[in-house]
Structures are given as C-alpha cells and as structure tokens.
Amino acid sequence: MPLSPDISNAGTNAVSTVSSAWNGKTTASPVAISFKNTGNSHGSPYFSLNYVNKDSLVDFGSNTTAGMDPLTISRAWAGQNLTAAQQKAIFSQGTGTDSTPAKSKMVLSNGKYVLDTANNESFDGGYMQATGNVPIQAAVAGSKSTVEATMAGDWAVMVRVQVAQGIDTKAFASSIAWDKSYYYLTVDSVSLLGQSVSINFPMQFDHHVYLDPAHPQTFYLKVKGIPFWMNQKATVDGHWTGIPLWSTWVPTAYGYNQLQLQDGNADYVDYLHNRQISPTSAQTLDNLGADGTTTNNK
Image (cartoon, rainbow, N blue to C red; front, top):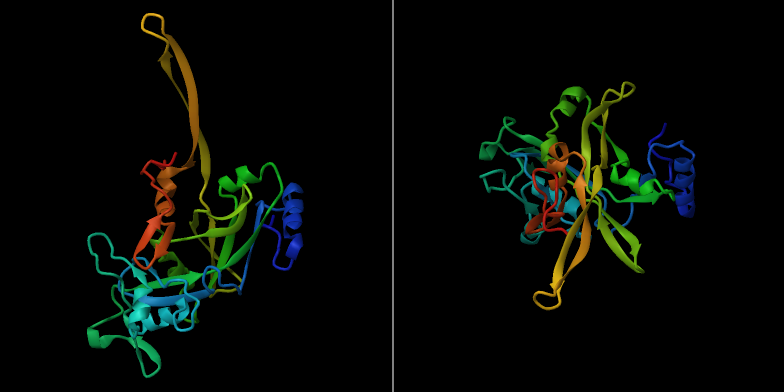
C-alpha cells in the first residue's frame, strides 16, 4: 500500500484525490505531501552539506534577497568568507557546556573548498552537517478519521539521499546522530474562525535508514509526524453563597484539553528539537517536561 497518492499535478483536485484514496483504504495516510521547487514565503528551497567541527545546530536564515539567501550564506560559511551582514543572519549554538558555535573545517581556496590545514584542521573529530529548507504542499482527506490519524503521526515523506561513488552507503547512513536532528514545519492558510493562520506540526525522523538494493549509492530517510493524544482533564470546584449559617455550596465544573506525546520517553527529545529559529534564538514550540507532558499550556 502506498504511503499517499501522488498530488504533485493534482492541482485543485488534490483534496478529492487523497480523500478518495484514504476513504477507499488504498493509501496508508490521510495526508498527501509533495515537494515544491518554487516559492519563497518561508525562504527559498536549498540544501547544504558541510564538514564541521561539532554536532550542534546551525541555521542560515530565510532571507530571499540575492547575496543574503541561505544557500549563498551557507557557501560563504563553509568557505569562511562571510560578510558582516551574512554573519548576523546565522544562528549557531554550542554543545552542552561549550558555548562556542560550530564552524566549518573547510576553507575556500582558489575556487575550491579544501581542508583548513592552516588552522590545524584535520579529518579527525569532524561531522557531516546537512542543512536545508524544503517547501511542500499538502492535501488532507475529508474524513472523520483524519484528525485521529494525523495526531497519531500517520503522515510522512521519504527523503532520498545519494552519496558519491566510493562512499560506503551503509556505513555513512549508520553514522547519523538522530539526537542531533532539528526540524521546523509550519503550515499556512489554515482557516480558523474566518482567519488565516500558520500552525506548527512537530515532526521527527523515524530513526531508521532505508537502503535501496537497486541503487547502492542511495538511501532514504522517513520524516514523519510525532504521535500525540488528547488528555481531557476535568476539575470540580465551587463556592459558598448566602450568609453565614444559611449559606449554600455551589459546585462548578470546568476542564481543559492538553496535547501530550503518546510515548514521551521515546519522542520528547525529537519534540524539543522542533525549533522556531531566528538569528538570536531557537525557541521550542512550547514547554515540555521529561515525561512528555506540556506545562503552562492550558
């Protein structure tokens, strides 16, 4: 069974296409996702692979102005020839107690990226760091089961990674540090009470590498939704009314709904790695405890 129907050329029929497939039980997800190569409302699409000195978060912004776009900035960062303005657009953080941000172990020399041996860099202790921005479009099935399936993380895309000849694909894939993966997904044009708003959907890798027997230099990674459930809490309170000795207790019932991770022990690190990034901060989506529940979020 396919993960979802192909909606890349469905146009205005995308919703009816995925609805028919989901309700007809011919697809595994009520959400169909396709990639877009154009659009800049959330930055232009790009992918950057750099050799760096530590496994911490680095982001190159979402500016679409020529010379300040993330692809240009990532190349300048890799070659250690950033302008002052480009440097300000980058967010980078340290690791643990080390507040020093990550930096490239390469340098641009005579038009080529080479190891920065002048500063004693070597191929020991380095990391391959992938950073990118992937605009997508999605269609959600019209079905009573859509909300439940979506909250269960039942939506995903497969990302194909192709490495150069001579690289051991299986060894390369097995070196992925899942606990150092960061994400940010925002969906536009969701109508709530007549207003168009942006909503964040937390996501994660499924911590598995899919090899392709037919193409030995290729492997796939699945990016999927983090499973949630709705915890409904009810509380009974009240107050006394009347005058002393003739007062009456009036009960008041109230409650609230709280989203919680289905498996907090397994998923809370991935959830906390969903970040909204600016040049000065990388904020989590909300306050989450180690048990997978949110706090101060009534």
